Image 1 (cartoon, one colour):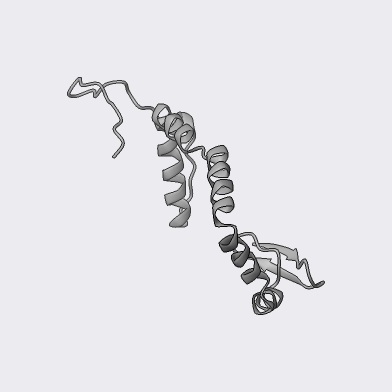
Image 2: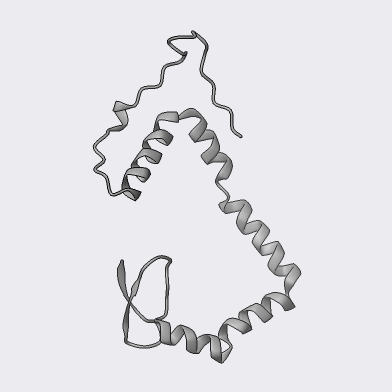
Length: 119
């Protein structure tokens, strides 16, 4: 949890999850004043312009394909991260290193090469 200072008043507030700019009282006041509604009205009024902007933004910032390609080539990292996340969720100690995870090129019993298939 992080403590921040509100943008519209000198009060400090605790951020628990997502990034917030305003304390709860100021956020409610902004909604009641219509500041959020004005943004939504502006988007609705300039819908085509907003859609073009969002498509361009997503195209520039979409790294999904890069992540998929990286994860396909680095199985150990995926296993390591999921094990660490699971241990953290269960409040367990996690003392593995990435070098502890070794994935062979083929199954030692069946002698079949291991491949990763998404889906």
